[in-house]
Every structure is written in C-alpha cells, then in structure tokens.
Image (tube, rainbow, N blue to C red):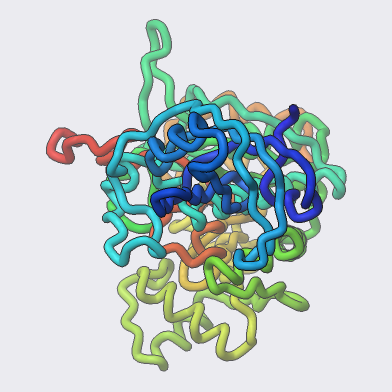
Amino acid sequence: MERTYISSLKDLIGKKVRIRGRVDTLRDQGKIVFLILRDITGKVQTVSWSGGNIEVFNSVKSLTAESVVDISGLVKEAKQVSTGYEVEIEEINIDSVSKTPLPIVIEQEYSKNISNLDKRLDYRWVDLRSQRNNLMMRVATVMGNRLREYCVKNNFVEIQGPRIISAASEGGANVFEVKYFDRKAYLAQSPQFHKQMGIAADLDRVFNMGPVFRAEKSFTTRHLTEYTSFDVEMGYIDSLRDVCKFEQEMIKFVLSGIKEKYGDEIKEIFGIEIKIPQGDFPYISVKDIKEKLTKAGVPSKDDGDFSPEEERALSEIMEKETGCEFVFVYDYPHKKRAFYHMKDSQNPQLALGYDLFWKGIEITTGAQREHRVDKLKENAKERGIELESLSDYFEYFEYGCPPHGGFAMGTERFLMKLLEYGSILETTYLPNTPNRLGKLINVKKVK
Ligand code: AMO
C-alpha cells in the first residue's frame, strides 16, 4: 500500500491507510495506548488496545518517543479528538527505535527549558525536527524557488561561478586559502568576478545562488564563515536605481510567495504576519541618515559605515517615518566600498553603491560596477591591489562590456529577519562559524 501523508487523512474517513513517520508522544493508559504520529504534514492520533491484535498492541506499548514507525490502519471518526478522526492501528512496523531521553529539548510546548543554541546545533538533526525549524526549512525552500523564479521570468540566466578561485574579490583579509595542487587558491567570498564575466559574455542578466566563504572571526548573530548568497548581475542598466528597483520587486515577489504558501502556518507557529511592502522602498543617502541618527542621539564612530546599534536605529527611524520595513542607503564613501564599485562622476569621493537594511540589519550590498577597464585598474591601484593578481578579471572588460550592476543577498539573514530568529545560526541548515564546523570546535585552536 502507498504511503498517505497525515494532512490527507481528513478526506479518508472509513478507508484503510498506510502512514509513516515519527512517534511524537505515546500515552499508555493500560489497556489502551494512544500514539501521536507526526510526519512533515502534521500529527494524528493513532490507537491500539489490548482487545485487538495483541502483538500489535505490545509493539506499540514498547515504543519510545521519536521512534520511526510504519502503520497501517483504519481512519475512523472520533468526536473526542480535536481533528474529528483517529487511526485504528491494524499493523505496525518499527523502522527505527529512538534512544531516550533525547539529547536536547526542542519544543517549547514540552518544556520551557529549551536547550541552549550550541547544544541544539550539536544535535542539529534532532533540533530541525521542531515545528518551528521544520517550517523554517520549508519556507527557505519557497524563498529559494521564488528568488530563482523571479529572475527567470525576467530573462535572467542562471550561472554557477566556481567556488575555488585564483584571486579574492572582496579583499584579502577574510579569505580562506586552499592548496590547489602545487599552488595557492582561494574559496570564493562571492561570485562577484564571475557574475560580471556573465555580463561580458553577453548573457545580459545573470544570477547565482550558492555557497560563499568568509574567513571572518566574527562571533555575532549575523555572521557565518560559509553562507548561501543570492547574487544578481544586470547588464545595460542606466543607473543604480535600476538595480534597487529590481531588488525591491524581487523581494515583494518572494514575500508574497511565502505568504501565499505558508502565511497561516507562520502566523500560527511564529506569531508573525508577513507584510508585503507597497510602492518603492525608501532611498536615503548615508549623510541624510547619519543626520537623523545624530538627532536621535545615536552615536556614530564612522562617517561611512554603520555600527550594529546604528543599523537597528536607522531601520526604526525609517520605518516610523515611511511605514516601510526596508530601506536602501546609498552614497557611501568610495574608499569604504569594494574597488569594483563605480565612482559617482559628480562626486568621485562617493560610490554608486547601496546597502539594503531590513529590521535592523544589512541584508544586501549592491552597486553599479566600473566597466571601463582603465578606471577599474585605477580604483584597484588606489587600494594598493597588485594589478597582476587580478589580470584575469581585468581582461573580462577588454573586449567590450556593457554597463552593469548587481547585488548579493545573504539568504540566511533574509530568513532570520523574516521569521525573527535571534541568530543566523538558527536559519542555516548546518552552520559553520569560527568555532563550529558542524559541531563545536575548540575556540582556542582557532587562530
Ligand atoms: P557583501 O560582502 O556585503 O557584498 O555581502 C553581501 C551580503 O551577504 C551577506 N553576508 C553574510 N551573511 C552571513 N555571514 C557573513 N559573514 C556575511 N557576509 C555578508 C549580507 C550581505 O549584505 N560582492 C558583493 C555583493 C555585490 O556587490 O553584488 C558582496 O559580497 O547579507
């Protein structure tokens, strides 16, 4: 018999079904045992009693919570159950027995003492079984699909830039070096150079979704050493605003897809109402937002960048003023940005780049790129970059390259903000950080 998912049972009252999943809870009442079975679509009460098949009854009684079982039985109306039905167990196969107790507490509903994050991440495969995390992973799937779908319907081509590369794109300090036969290579911090290559290759508009690596010793709630970047590059733009407009519409498309599919569940499980922004996102210069921050009494250490405190405050201020949770900030000093950002021709101290903030953190960086190779080399020289080290990259612009721009969004950060998790580690399937490679590693050993 084929497996039926639990969510379909409501239409199958009076029918025999086969359901597979995990023992959520077992309530042994002596002559009758209630087994709450859980699969990815929900939970159902199943029941066995001593007056029925005694072998089945004894098997059910012997089970532990979180064991994996394969049950066949009859779906029966049951007025006393909240769903209105239950499954009377006729056969049971025990696929896998779980040890007890579980190494971590994963659900608030069972205990207020949910295990601490490090311990939960050590047992991530158990942690991901919680309702919240299970939903988070399903939402992440829709997010990825919608990001792709939006690009594809706007005539983008998907690329997969190489992850082992010969030169760092985002600055030398936070790059992982790897041995590549008898020479040095690097793990890509971003597909930056190779998405720009797609423009020089006449793919017109490209996107790339995949892992990137940052050798950054940041122990924060927003940094990973490996994350999934959603990268976009668009040819033939007129200005940076084209890039921002594209991104804002893409975000609306992603949010509406998530709301449509999981809005109700997100509301029930996370208590969050997904808001779809209307109209254009506010767009404000660094100078103007710094002024607002000063007025609000938020200290600034750096004219061209924002501290986490400033990021939180700038989001709050702009949301209060405009009603929009998202805000584009532009006109950063060029020296604070990547060398490949184009300089503003009116004021070459400034870069034609932006950051997008959402609920207090930066989720995206974007820019118009310098496609004129002489100027690009000048920018690199100003930063003290050895031109020879980027010779492959410079060549992309030597055989004609359209004006272009693009951005990259950290998908784990997006999900973290969407579902209001306190840490990016929670919205990463198996997070790597300076002191965590799957499991916790000794921090002292991380030099
Ligand atoms: P940037 O370095 O700002 O820009 O990264 C873009 C976005 O990636 C996310 N992000 C991170 N997420 C988790 N852990 C990290 N350590 C981390 N670092 C960055 C953030 C950030 O906004 N090539 C440019 C983009 C471009 O111009 O197209 C770049 O990589 O959400």
